[in-house]
Image: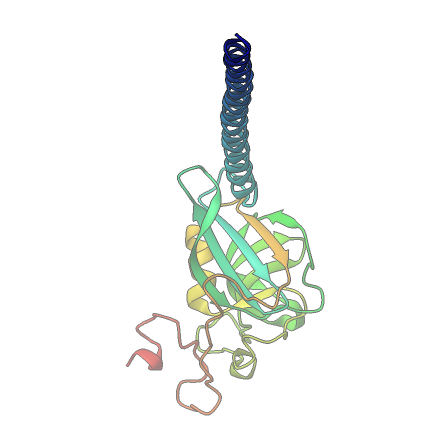
Amino acid sequence: EPEEQNYSKEIEEKSYNDIINNSVSNEIKNEVNENIISNENQNKKNNNENKQNSTSNDKNEVQQSSTKYPTGKTKYYIKVNYGENAVTIYKKDENGYYSIPVKAMVCSCGTATPKSGVYKTSKGYEWGTLEGGTFGRYSTRIIGGILFHSVPYTSESEDSLEYWEYDKLGTTASLGCVRLSVADTKWIFDNCEVGTQVEFYTSSDPGPLGKPTAQKISDNVECRNWDPTDTSSNSPWNK
């Protein structure tokens, strides 16, 4: 009888231990499952937040890229880098921003050239009167006495170019106007309507299209009284 009691007691203890072990095992499993579910939910939440942040960043990038460039009603926008004596012409992209550079020009600015600001062109003159009794071809007024125009001529004649001044293109040489070759100032005269915006700034970077070089002409005695970019059939450069 004592053996049977001991045997019965062992069975009861074993059953009790099994129940405890199963209970503990189930609690651990439930805790593990809860942790897995919690982690999955947190991952989903993090993924959603990342998507929202990515979308927000994309919107900000679009907004920044669009507001980086100016807008306007005219076909072109002109930027004058007075520090580098370079001009860049921009046209509109598909969203209406002047973000596409189309033409670069070498120029000569001066001490009275605006150092900042955006202005709108007004009148144009095939021959404009300049300081010192000289004349500028294909002149376009920017503001006040500041114009785009050719290198000065001593008279209203195509063969009276101040060739020594032409050799200064690309350096600071004017009183304040923006000097250009005949071909470049005529391009502005012909293509940039009244009201075209002109921005003045300075940077060590001449512009996205770089800075063209101008031909030196003083040593060419036969041709130097003519602008070498002049397409006139009378020009000795075109013979």
